[in-house]
Length: 333
Image (cartoon, rainbow, N blue to C red):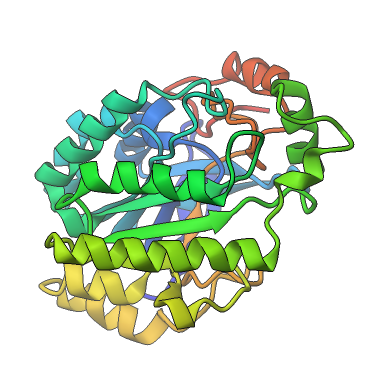
C-alpha cells in the first residue's frame, strides 16, 4: 500500500501518470468541506483529481485508487455532512481538523458562519462520527488591540466550556506575520487594527507564548476537574512547551489513525511501515506523516485576514468564476 504511481484515464480520455497516495489531505490550502464538498465527491466518483503546484504552476494528477484515509481541514463542515456516508460506503476512513476561533467581534474571519452556528456544527459532527475524530483547533492565536494574552485565554476557555465532551484534543498555533508578506498585507488592508508600522506587533514573543502555555495548562486542570480530559498540542511551532504538557502535534497522525481504524489491518500495516516518514512538502516544524494535499491557494472564501493561502480577496473571487463542480481541479488554468 506504499504511495506510488499509477496510470489513469482522464475525463478527456487521455492516459496520464498519477500519484496514488494512501492518505489525502483536504486541505491545508483551502476549505474543501465548506466550499467544495460537491466537487470532492464528484472527483472521488471519477477516481482522480488534478492539482496545480502553487509555485511552478505545473499540473499533476492524483489518483484515489489506493486512498484509505482523508484528513479534512475546515472552519465549516456543515456542507459536507450529507456526503459522509459515501466515504463510509467506500470504506475510506476520515477525521476532521476543525478550526473554531473566536474573532467574531474583530471580524477577522468575515466569511465564516456566526460563532453560535459553528459551535453547533462542531457538536453535530462530533455526535455523528465521534469526539476523537473531531480535533479542535484555535488556530492561529493572534494579538491585536483589545486582544492580549489573557483575553485570548478567556476566549479559549469560553469555547472550551461549550465543547466539553465533544473533542479530545485542542491544537494551537501562534500567528506568523513576518514570515508571510501576504499576511502582512492583508492584515493592514482588511482590518482597522494594524498599519504597516504596527502589524509586526501581532507576533508573539517567547514570554507571551509561555504565558499562553501556562494559562492553557491551568485551564486543562480545571477542565479535567469537570471531567474533560483534553490533550494540548501546537501545530508547526518550534518552541518547546513540554514543561506545560503541550506536545508538538502531527495533524496527519499515524498513531491516531492506528487507534481510530484499528480494525483495518492492511491500513494499520501501512501506517506501521510509513508513519515515520515526514511530509517533506510541509514546514520544517511540521510533524505530519506523508499525505497528498489536493487543495489550491486563492480559493477559500472565508477571507480570513491572517490567511497565508490567499493573496487577496480579488484573486479568490476571480478564481471562483473558474471553478466547476465537475472540473478536474478546484480551478482550471
